[in-house]
Image 1 (cartoon, protein in one colour):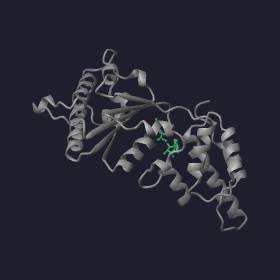
Image 2 (cartoon, helix red, strand yellow):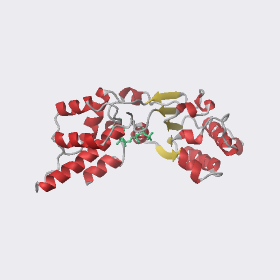
Image 3 (cartoon, helix red, strand yellow):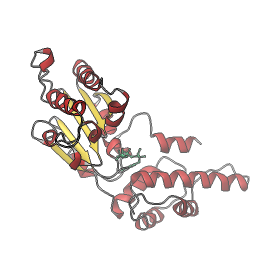
Image 4 (cartoon, protein in one colour):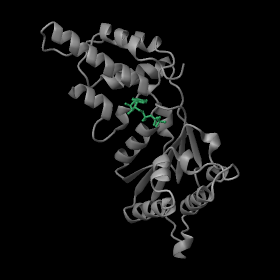
Length: 256
Ligand code: ATP
Protein backbone atom coordinates (compact mmCIF):
# COMPACT_ATOMS: atom_id res chain seq x y z
CA UNK A 1 0.00 0.00 0.00
CA UNK A 2 2.81 2.40 0.94
CA UNK A 3 4.55 1.31 -2.15
CA UNK A 4 1.53 2.29 -4.16
CA UNK A 5 1.31 5.68 -2.46
CA UNK A 6 4.97 6.32 -3.17
CA UNK A 7 4.54 5.73 -6.85
CA UNK A 8 1.36 7.67 -7.06
CA UNK A 9 2.19 10.82 -5.17
CA UNK A 10 5.93 10.86 -5.53
CA UNK A 11 7.96 11.86 -2.53
CA UNK A 12 7.34 15.05 -0.64
CA UNK A 13 9.84 16.89 -2.76
CA UNK A 14 10.59 15.91 -6.31
CA UNK A 15 14.29 15.70 -7.19
CA UNK A 16 15.98 15.55 -10.57
CA UNK A 17 16.77 11.92 -9.79
CA UNK A 18 13.03 11.22 -9.83
CA UNK A 19 12.90 12.03 -13.53
CA UNK A 20 13.61 9.20 -15.94
CA UNK A 21 15.25 10.25 -19.19
CA UNK A 22 14.61 13.89 -20.26
CA UNK A 23 18.24 14.82 -19.42
CA UNK A 24 18.60 17.38 -22.21
CA UNK A 25 15.19 18.83 -21.46
CA UNK A 26 16.03 19.29 -17.80
CA UNK A 27 19.39 20.83 -18.71
CA UNK A 28 17.68 23.49 -20.76
CA UNK A 29 15.51 24.48 -17.82
CA UNK A 30 17.79 27.39 -16.88
CA UNK A 31 15.06 29.82 -17.56
CA UNK A 32 15.66 33.45 -18.41
CA UNK A 33 12.13 34.43 -17.48
CA UNK A 34 9.57 32.00 -18.73
CA UNK A 35 9.64 28.44 -19.98
CA UNK A 36 6.87 26.74 -21.86
CA UNK A 37 6.82 22.96 -21.61
CA UNK A 38 4.66 21.32 -24.22
CA UNK A 39 3.84 17.77 -25.17
CA UNK A 40 1.28 15.03 -24.66
CA UNK A 41 -0.26 14.29 -21.25
CA UNK A 42 1.71 12.22 -18.78
CA UNK A 43 5.17 12.85 -20.20
CA UNK A 44 6.64 14.51 -17.11
CA UNK A 45 6.00 18.24 -17.53
CA UNK A 46 4.63 18.69 -14.03
CA UNK A 47 7.37 16.44 -12.69
CA UNK A 48 10.07 18.67 -14.22
CA UNK A 49 8.49 21.85 -12.87
CA UNK A 50 8.25 20.35 -9.38
CA UNK A 51 11.85 19.16 -9.52
CA UNK A 52 13.14 22.57 -10.66
CA UNK A 53 11.24 24.25 -7.84
CA UNK A 54 12.57 21.98 -5.14
CA UNK A 55 16.12 21.70 -6.51
CA UNK A 56 16.53 25.47 -6.80
CA UNK A 57 14.95 26.03 -3.40
CA UNK A 58 12.73 28.72 -4.89
CA UNK A 59 9.35 29.53 -3.42
CA UNK A 60 6.89 27.78 -5.67
CA UNK A 61 3.31 28.54 -6.51
CA UNK A 62 1.32 26.02 -8.52
CA UNK A 63 -1.63 27.21 -10.56
CA UNK A 64 -3.93 25.21 -12.77
CA UNK A 65 -5.15 27.28 -15.71
CA UNK A 66 -8.43 25.44 -16.17
CA UNK A 67 -9.20 25.52 -12.49
CA UNK A 68 -8.44 29.19 -11.94
CA UNK A 69 -10.53 30.04 -14.98
CA UNK A 70 -13.60 28.02 -13.97
CA UNK A 71 -13.57 28.39 -10.20
CA UNK A 72 -12.81 32.08 -10.09
CA UNK A 73 -14.42 33.27 -13.27
CA UNK A 74 -14.58 37.05 -13.18
CA UNK A 75 -12.00 37.08 -10.40
CA UNK A 76 -9.38 35.35 -12.46
CA UNK A 77 -7.41 38.52 -13.14
CA UNK A 78 -7.12 39.48 -9.50
CA UNK A 79 -6.16 35.90 -8.61
CA UNK A 80 -3.34 36.05 -11.15
CA UNK A 81 -2.23 39.44 -9.88
CA UNK A 82 -2.13 38.07 -6.32
CA UNK A 83 -0.06 35.14 -7.44
CA UNK A 84 2.54 37.42 -9.05
CA UNK A 85 2.55 39.64 -5.97
CA UNK A 86 3.13 36.67 -3.70
CA UNK A 87 5.88 35.46 -6.02
CA UNK A 88 7.61 38.85 -5.96
CA UNK A 89 7.29 39.13 -2.18
CA UNK A 90 8.78 35.68 -1.61
CA UNK A 91 11.32 35.77 -4.43
CA UNK A 92 13.15 33.90 -5.74
CA UNK A 93 9.98 32.19 -6.88
CA UNK A 94 8.71 29.87 -9.52
CA UNK A 95 5.14 30.16 -10.71
CA UNK A 96 4.05 26.94 -12.34
CA UNK A 97 0.98 27.30 -14.54
CA UNK A 98 -0.36 23.92 -15.62
CA UNK A 99 -2.86 23.83 -18.50
CA UNK A 100 -2.02 27.37 -19.50
CA UNK A 101 -4.05 26.93 -22.70
CA UNK A 102 -7.20 27.25 -20.59
CA UNK A 103 -5.95 30.58 -19.27
CA UNK A 104 -4.51 32.02 -22.45
CA UNK A 105 -6.39 30.92 -25.55
CA UNK A 106 -5.93 32.86 -28.77
CA UNK A 107 -7.62 36.22 -28.39
CA UNK A 108 -8.77 36.34 -32.00
CA UNK A 109 -10.80 33.17 -31.60
CA UNK A 110 -14.32 33.11 -30.24
CA UNK A 111 -12.97 34.01 -26.81
CA UNK A 112 -14.96 36.00 -24.29
CA UNK A 113 -14.06 39.49 -23.02
CA UNK A 114 -12.98 37.98 -19.72
CA UNK A 115 -10.61 35.62 -21.51
CA UNK A 116 -9.10 38.50 -23.43
CA UNK A 117 -8.56 40.50 -20.26
CA UNK A 118 -6.98 37.51 -18.54
CA UNK A 119 -4.50 37.10 -21.38
CA UNK A 120 -3.66 40.80 -21.31
CA UNK A 121 -3.16 40.70 -17.54
CA UNK A 122 -0.81 37.76 -17.72
CA UNK A 123 1.22 39.38 -20.52
CA UNK A 124 1.52 42.58 -18.51
CA UNK A 125 2.60 40.74 -15.38
CA UNK A 126 5.13 38.71 -17.30
CA UNK A 127 6.59 41.91 -18.67
CA UNK A 128 7.15 42.91 -15.08
CA UNK A 129 5.03 46.01 -15.44
CA UNK A 130 2.02 46.20 -13.23
CA UNK A 131 0.13 49.06 -14.82
CA UNK A 132 -2.65 48.94 -12.26
CA UNK A 133 -0.16 49.79 -9.55
CA UNK A 134 1.29 52.49 -11.78
CA UNK A 135 4.70 51.09 -11.02
CA UNK A 136 7.43 49.42 -12.97
CA UNK A 137 8.41 46.47 -10.88
CA UNK A 138 10.94 44.57 -12.80
CA UNK A 139 10.59 41.20 -11.21
CA UNK A 140 11.96 39.23 -14.10
CA UNK A 141 15.23 38.36 -12.40
CA UNK A 142 13.51 36.92 -9.38
CA UNK A 143 10.34 35.35 -10.63
CA UNK A 144 10.32 32.63 -13.22
CA UNK A 145 7.17 31.36 -14.85
CA UNK A 146 7.04 27.76 -16.00
CA UNK A 147 3.94 26.79 -17.91
CA UNK A 148 2.75 23.51 -19.35
CA UNK A 149 0.35 22.69 -22.13
CA UNK A 150 -0.75 19.80 -24.31
CA UNK A 151 -1.89 22.26 -26.95
CA UNK A 152 0.81 24.86 -27.65
CA UNK A 153 -0.85 25.96 -30.88
CA UNK A 154 -4.00 27.08 -29.14
CA UNK A 155 -2.09 29.63 -27.04
CA UNK A 156 -2.29 33.32 -27.72
CA UNK A 157 0.75 34.13 -29.88
CA UNK A 158 1.77 37.15 -27.82
CA UNK A 159 2.61 34.79 -24.99
CA UNK A 160 5.29 33.15 -27.09
CA UNK A 161 7.17 36.32 -28.01
CA UNK A 162 10.59 37.11 -26.56
CA UNK A 163 10.52 38.35 -22.99
CA UNK A 164 7.63 36.15 -22.06
CA UNK A 165 7.94 32.43 -22.61
CA UNK A 166 11.21 32.82 -24.38
CA UNK A 167 12.08 29.18 -24.11
CA UNK A 168 9.92 26.36 -25.35
CA UNK A 169 10.84 22.81 -24.55
CA UNK A 170 9.10 19.86 -26.07
CA UNK A 171 8.51 16.99 -23.67
CA UNK A 172 7.83 14.24 -26.13
CA UNK A 173 6.70 10.65 -26.13
CA UNK A 174 9.54 8.52 -24.73
CA UNK A 175 11.57 6.18 -26.97
CA UNK A 176 12.77 2.75 -25.75
CA UNK A 177 15.86 4.24 -24.07
CA UNK A 178 13.79 6.88 -22.34
CA UNK A 179 11.36 4.22 -21.17
CA UNK A 180 14.27 2.21 -19.80
CA UNK A 181 15.40 5.23 -17.74
CA UNK A 182 11.84 5.96 -16.62
CA UNK A 183 11.24 2.35 -15.54
CA UNK A 184 14.54 2.26 -13.66
CA UNK A 185 13.66 5.54 -11.96
CA UNK A 186 10.21 4.39 -10.91
CA UNK A 187 11.30 0.94 -9.73
CA UNK A 188 14.44 2.06 -7.88
CA UNK A 189 12.53 2.80 -4.70
CA UNK A 190 10.17 -0.15 -4.65
CA UNK A 191 10.95 -3.74 -3.74
CA UNK A 192 11.39 -5.75 -6.90
CA UNK A 193 13.32 -8.68 -8.23
CA UNK A 194 13.57 -7.14 -11.71
CA UNK A 195 16.96 -7.43 -13.34
CA UNK A 196 18.34 -4.75 -15.61
CA UNK A 197 17.81 -7.04 -18.59
CA UNK A 198 14.19 -7.56 -17.68
CA UNK A 199 13.67 -3.80 -17.38
CA UNK A 200 15.36 -3.35 -20.77
CA UNK A 201 12.98 -5.93 -22.18
CA UNK A 202 9.94 -4.19 -20.72
CA UNK A 203 11.16 -0.87 -22.11
CA UNK A 204 11.41 -2.42 -25.56
CA UNK A 205 7.90 -3.70 -25.56
CA UNK A 206 6.07 -0.72 -24.13
CA UNK A 207 5.78 1.27 -27.32
CA UNK A 208 3.35 4.16 -26.86
CA UNK A 209 3.51 4.15 -23.07
CA UNK A 210 4.35 7.57 -21.60
CA UNK A 211 5.84 8.10 -18.13
CA UNK A 212 2.43 8.27 -16.46
CA UNK A 213 1.44 4.99 -18.15
CA UNK A 214 4.64 3.31 -16.97
CA UNK A 215 3.98 4.56 -13.44
CA UNK A 216 0.47 3.10 -13.70
CA UNK A 217 1.90 -0.23 -14.90
CA UNK A 218 4.22 -0.36 -11.88
CA UNK A 219 1.34 0.50 -9.57
CA UNK A 220 -0.78 -2.24 -11.08
CA UNK A 221 2.13 -4.70 -10.84
CA UNK A 222 2.44 -3.75 -7.17
CA UNK A 223 -1.19 -4.71 -6.58
CA UNK A 224 -0.79 -7.95 -8.50
CA UNK A 225 2.32 -8.77 -6.49
CA UNK A 226 0.52 -8.13 -3.21
CA UNK A 227 -2.35 -10.41 -4.22
CA UNK A 228 0.04 -13.11 -5.33
CA UNK A 229 2.09 -12.96 -2.14
CA UNK A 230 -0.97 -12.93 0.09
CA UNK A 231 -2.32 -15.99 -1.69
CA UNK A 232 0.96 -17.76 -1.05
CA UNK A 233 1.01 -16.59 2.56
CA UNK A 234 4.27 -14.69 2.06
CA UNK A 235 5.40 -11.44 3.68
CA UNK A 236 7.62 -10.41 0.83
CA UNK A 237 5.91 -7.93 -1.49
CA UNK A 238 8.53 -7.69 -4.22
CA UNK A 239 7.37 -7.14 -7.77
CA UNK A 240 8.59 -9.74 -10.26
CA UNK A 241 8.68 -9.85 -14.04
CA UNK A 242 5.46 -11.90 -14.18
CA UNK A 243 3.66 -9.15 -12.24
CA UNK A 244 4.90 -6.56 -14.71
CA UNK A 245 3.86 -8.71 -17.67
CA UNK A 246 0.41 -9.18 -16.20
CA UNK A 247 0.10 -5.45 -15.49
CA UNK A 248 0.88 -4.70 -19.14
CA UNK A 249 -2.25 -6.62 -20.02
CA UNK A 250 -4.28 -4.32 -17.79
CA UNK A 251 -2.74 -0.88 -18.35
CA UNK A 252 -2.79 0.21 -21.97
CA UNK A 253 -0.64 2.93 -23.55
CA UNK A 254 -2.33 6.33 -23.71
CA UNK A 255 -0.79 7.33 -27.04
CA UNK A 256 -1.77 4.44 -29.27
P1 ATP B 1 -0.34 16.44 -17.96
O1 ATP B 1 -0.17 17.15 -19.27
O2 ATP B 1 -1.43 15.42 -17.97
O3 ATP B 1 -0.37 17.36 -16.77
P2 ATP B 1 2.44 15.88 -17.39
O4 ATP B 1 3.31 15.87 -18.59
O5 ATP B 1 2.48 17.06 -16.52
O6 ATP B 1 0.95 15.52 -17.81
P3 ATP B 1 3.25 14.45 -15.07
O7 ATP B 1 2.14 14.92 -14.19
O8 ATP B 1 4.57 15.08 -14.88
O9 ATP B 1 2.80 14.58 -16.57
O10 ATP B 1 3.40 12.88 -14.98
C1 ATP B 1 2.48 12.11 -14.26
C2 ATP B 1 3.21 11.04 -13.48
O11 ATP B 1 3.83 10.12 -14.38
C3 ATP B 1 4.36 11.58 -12.64
O12 ATP B 1 3.94 11.98 -11.38
C4 ATP B 1 5.30 10.39 -12.58
O13 ATP B 1 4.85 9.47 -11.62
C5 ATP B 1 5.12 9.75 -13.93
N1 ATP B 1 6.11 10.21 -14.91
C6 ATP B 1 5.86 10.90 -16.06
N2 ATP B 1 7.00 11.14 -16.74
C7 ATP B 1 8.00 10.60 -16.01
C8 ATP B 1 9.42 10.54 -16.17
N3 ATP B 1 10.04 11.08 -17.24
N4 ATP B 1 10.12 9.93 -15.21
C9 ATP B 1 9.53 9.36 -14.13
N5 ATP B 1 8.21 9.40 -13.92
C10 ATP B 1 7.44 10.00 -14.85
